[in-house]
Image: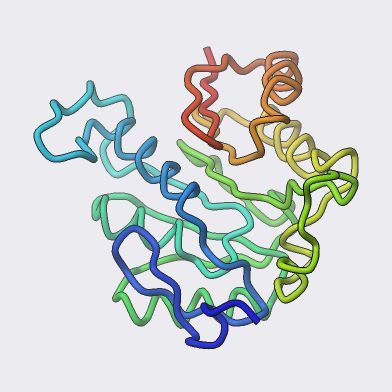
Length: 215
């Protein structure tokens, strides 16, 4: 069993989050989602680095799709206190853990049980998502090391891209300007091409994270 599940906590962006086998263990590569959101908000995420130009409105509405432990949504709220942050997940058990983490960190998050955007009745300024993107057929995959984590949070059909493509399509039907996605770098080019057809421009890649902008 992974140490995080044994201890019941995992560090993410300098804060400890409750984790159980109902949620994915937060990874360091996911922290760059936070960095991208802060950049859009005109905030410097590195000491001594000049803050970029602000691109988000005041009091931005930000939605974390597939929130799991809630670490992304809660971190965004703690770092951008003027943001109105929502978090969705299809798993009730995951949302219970996310709510515990929100209470632990005194973060006001609006939680929604939903498959992607199905139950989301508003238009966010930014959508961020670390959805299941693992392809079970990857020959480098260590399935044993992942066996303790929820399959629903790891694996997706269509070479790991089914849910990402569905979210892109749903987002394209709205007026959300910014879409931030996590995926394996081997999937990036296909996602960029698919998202371009949906009307978004690829603006930045950082590690596992892709930023798309509606022109």
